[in-house]
Length: 255
Length: 220
Image 1 (tube, rainbow over the protein chains, first blue to last red):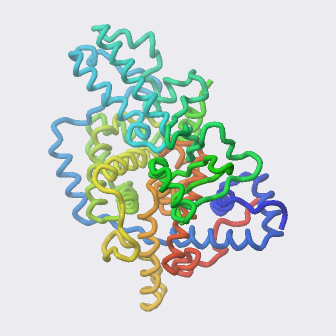
Image 2 (cartoon, chains in turn yellow, cyan; image 1 turned 180 degrees about the vertical axis):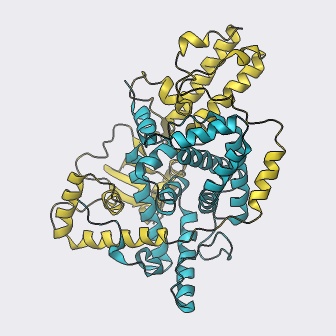
Image 3 (tube, chains in turn blue, orange; image 1 turned 60 degrees about the horizontal axis):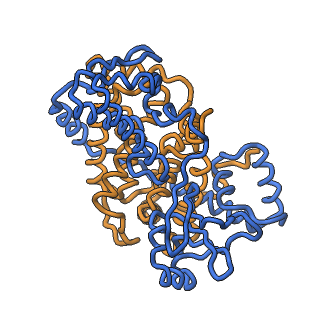
């Protein structure tokens, strides 16, 4: 065996062919010398293979008719304005003719549709806040400026070529660091970092890896009994890294 | 310029030009009914299977598919061609499933208690004998049930990868997260699924006797 064991993330990505050449070489060097990691690799392959072999289920025969009859009941033709050539800017004129409350509604729905994941219960928290902030800002502008023309100078690129990625377009010049999402639980502040809640001030990659504590283990149960609100952080399937009794722990949903 | 979010969304979505997809959207905007028919024919099975694996229920999956295509119908005109239409439809579908499933019920089907139905998967291999197929069906059912018990973020990532065959970059574009997050969600989803299967006596998640070094490859 050479060095520490490979992480399950590396093994999983390797099985999927999603590692770069340098990383793959590093993994292969380790695998050549480590029977334990070879066995984990084989197990990951079997699992991924088993999942891929699940049969695709054909949709029910009547589904197409259901969809078509539902669409036939739609009051209008496609709601979106006819698309212009790539890069062109759709006209805002019909929009400006609407009363303020309908403009607001239309705008909400536009943002809804062009920024799908963050507004639909995304598991990464900062983006919905950005969207909400943007919506409020636009609302204020619309209410203050009856003509709606205030949109143009502030968001010159708003409805341009690639509207489904609105957040990336509008915030293209925003600082790379998004606002941190924090939560105060059990008297500690936790910061959302990708998939993990990390107690502020704790370095999960610091000296010595955190000790993994499954929520259903005796230690996990004890911790959750003492600080029941930690369960709130675990509810989304995430892990929580925290200091407890002078030790860095990684509490996670599992056994 | 361009934050990490921008990188995640834009890089993940750029998978070449999508002129045909764009043309389809334009035809739809011009009122050509065949355009939507083509979209439905091309993606109905994909959306239904995604909804089936995310919801774990055949009837729910049918309802979800219908609603997803209603949304696609209404908003296809706003498709810009930056991402593939497939990615765009996956996004609509995942979002709709999230909304519906979180609103109506958490997935709490205990392992082994789900009845047979469209949600219970089979492992397809017509070359097997009836007995072998029955074993495979049982293992497939356990895998499908285990999948339904994963936390939603992990289930989405694993389904998009292993059942829908998307690359990590495509999944990042669909879910609006970084590729690194996709890597970790897939790994953790598989880890948890393996633990669930091990508990059920399906050693190390070895459904249907899938051969070990079958795919993935020791590529360098």
